[in-house]
Length: 158
Image (cartoon, rainbow, N blue to C red; front, side, top):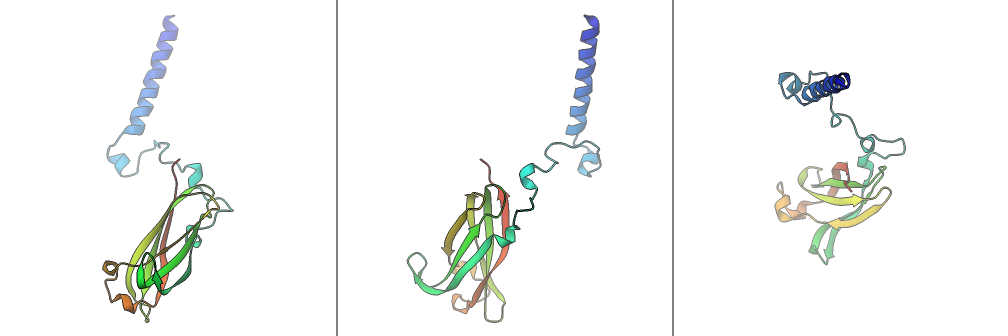
């Protein structure tokens, strides 16, 4: 009986040492030097791109853009119609940055659009227009085109 208790005690001490080593927040851990790694350091299966997964930058498309009278954005608004199609392998949240350009291609300002919990292969369709406060380097009337400047795709929780 004492032998079994001793074995359990040794196992508990060994497990405790491993846990303490993995949780240490010392200089080695801060410098990225320790040998212990946690499950949080390892990529999750949904973080690994599959061969069929499309890069996030290809998921956002501007369908059309230009000045129009719009029910939401008002008369003579520069409206951007876009689609976001989830080319990933699981549900995802999207942020797409849009830059508004003048006739020389200089950036006048920017805005962003989102799509939350978009299922794999599903498409979100929307439209947006810049606010006056988002156009910092000119006037709204200077806008001649728009481009997608950034796309972030993150795994959707639940």
